[in-house]
Image (cartoon, rainbow, N blue to C red; front, top):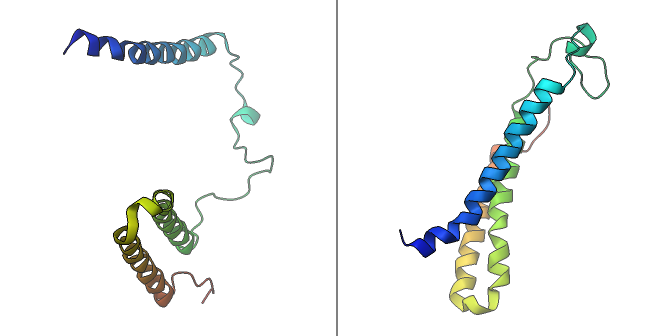
Length: 124
């Protein structure tokens, strides 16, 4: 590797070393100097100031997971629309038709999940 290229990476290496050293030092010092009070109240489960009730391992509908996955899926796909909108004029007609085909695939997927009933929340 050329010496000038190595010199370009030196600030990055120093930053990583300083940040890592700060994290390790802070964790070590807080562990040594921090309070060590343990008791039933300290070790009890705490959730938003509300007393915990029952078992946290109760089953709930898979539709929550499905809705979250579908949201992430379509959210990430919509993110690809932003660069297209920024370079809309420079892409020209081929760029327009490529994005229309992309949108068609998105809409086909959306209508598919609607047909399968993935977004229905009735409790049968």
